[in-house]
Image 1 (cartoon, one colour):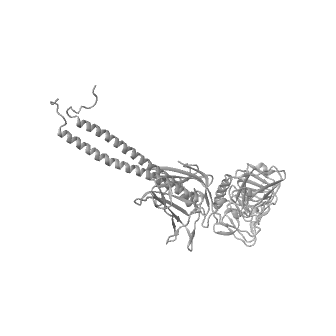
Image 2 (cartoon, each protein chain N blue to C red):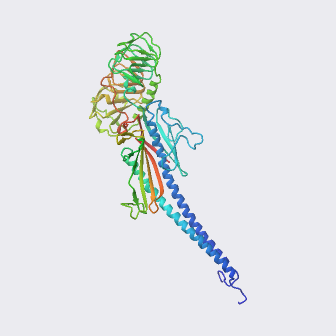
Image 3 (cartoon, each protein chain N blue to C red):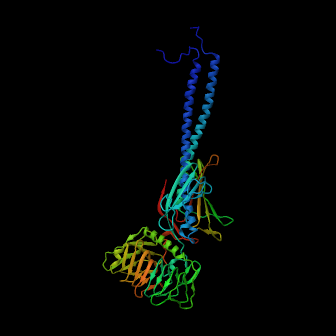
Length: 154
Length: 433
């Protein structure tokens, strides 16, 4: 039995090196995979709440969405809606505490007919709606959805 | 039997580590692939949602663009043609939604996603294709398009708007007359003070793109209104009150009106409507307010054979904001109804598929919209007459004072805003893919 040789030092070193390499690469890959998974989840939730917001705007409709502030050149007007907050499940929150995502709707009206400090819309006006969803942890944009409403349109 | 590695044997550690590393790597790669696939799928779904919204934006964008054009030009030029521009992947006009990714291409055609250009009449569909991050979505909707109707420029300012020939034995009109063809026979035109207007030209008594031929007495234009006649004048045209005869005129105007009124007629025919109960042998009573299908545009229908029986129809509970439209369905009409309505100038009889109308047994009251019909007039017509051909017998009259159509055929919430230049709107037919 003593004539049989055991594990050599070189073999042990090479094996250890491989194990270390695999562990390092595996750990990084695991972290990357987790990031992908989180990003996928975040995109999915963001898409759902953004789409829901645009659909709500469509239901309110061209004529009933709030008017905005007239631009200096009087050619357009912009309305920035209030920032809304959502938790990880896409449930709306009352404030930013514990928020996972934030959402803000913007409406740009053009062309408009200005009368003093107010304006009116007509059948040639377009109301461009964009809904931006941000990650509250770093304030980066996750998603932007947008559409255009017209009088008597979709 | 001994199973597994014998660590007492030479070189067993390295193979074992390699095998375990391979298994570990496979697991990691598999997990990464799964996570990557899920992420890609999530992004693709988000892009697909975004693309549909951009495609819909394209439809509304085209709708707003059409609204800017309906005041002038021919109807076919109001919409974007289904033409593929060199270098573009899809047919139509390219656009985008400011602040978002992706583009749309939108055009109009006669069928959903079709390639036949809209000629200005009949159904029109807007079609949009959008691309966002590789996701492609399409949307199509049917729209209604009607021309601008500002006071003084619409065919409804004419007591008679005849797209083709006319033959009269006599009689008179209270309002102006427009004919595009040959008009034979005597007639007294525009006896009341309501001149017509074409584009920027006013004070019109007669707008005639064709020849005036004489048979019996000459034609007369009253009250100092002008006559525009592009063709020849057989005999003479008496201008009472010193109106002027002009030979230069826009000969295409009547043709444009024909396209527009045909489109309106077809749109009204497809508008949701209620059938009028005609079972009463004497008096037909219609509760206008009970028809709430299209807001203040109250659309009804009857068969052409129904209006033959000599009866009285009463439009009850009609307000000044209502416009009543009755679609009369059938190829031949022999008119037999006396009409009572509180606002007769907001009543339109729409004969969308009628070839022949005879007004003999009773006077006709309301706007007669019959773009394909030949009218044989023995009795008075009280309101606008918009027809293809006109022939009168004896000396029946066209009444305009108090009967000039003032209704709104746009209907419901489609009433244009302050800057509106026409009526354009979604009909309710939509599909997306």
